[in-house]
Length: 73
Image (cartoon, rainbow, N blue to C red; front, top):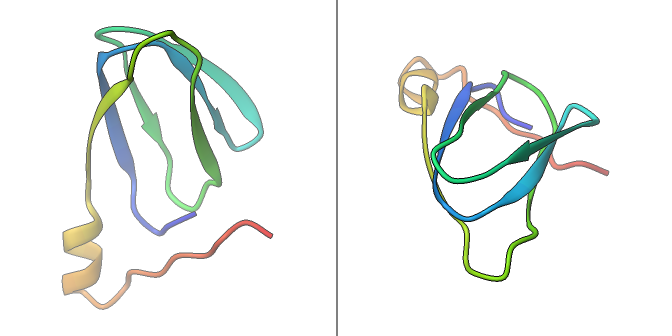
């Protein structure tokens, strides 16, 4: 988990993400957000590669010296 908010655009493929313990299915052209300080993982369930484009406010948090992250135990 990280102190930044990350938005994802599914360019191609299908699968699901587990965000804060909840399963979120996705496919081509879907958009979803992982909120700040939330554990998450992404899983490709299709028969082809999945391409997810992401963008976040991490550069701002780093510039303000507020960025941190923590691995799930």
